Length: 228
Ligand code: SF4
Image: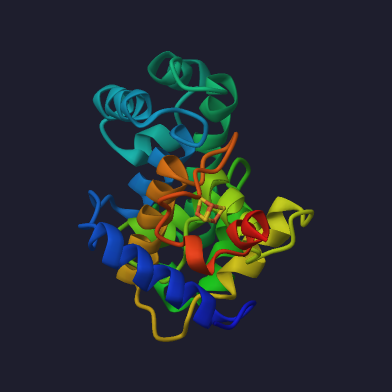
């Protein structure tokens, strides 16, 4: 098995699919809807962020109205989410920035960019980091070939030596994005995120990894070190 190459991700992916099966597609939002949803959910559990999203839709009706809403009115809808005061400012700002850049509140133009370029543009919006930008590209109707890398993935990637353990998170995310095999489609990156998240929650947990029984055990450098 090769390390530090796209083949490594491919081997992991095939193992996990054989173990868990192929995950089905998630709920598709428009790219702008996904941006709002991902900002609300960046530090908040899904049921809470979904409730906040519905509150916004009920209060403002359209993303256009939300773009020019007063932060205190936005806060009233999203107060349950973590960093609600901050996102009450950042969400309208991000929507206004999209209108300024594309002339309309629409992110369809990102389809014409390379994935790396589209990720960078989104990360230029205040409050939008690597995870949120990848969610917009991969989980929305855009269906672009970005991999959503969260804390679960970074923990796994460090133990599996996809990246150096002491690499800063922002550099690790970029390094992992570059490992995506050229043959993968957007559905592959989406499934890969789901599969690794499940592995990280069931086996590669934060405190003490449960290598015994892990489907990657005999190819994982961390596990091999434990056995030697
Ligand atoms: S073998 Fe252990 S360290 Fe490696 S991926 Fe599985 S749980 Fe994580």
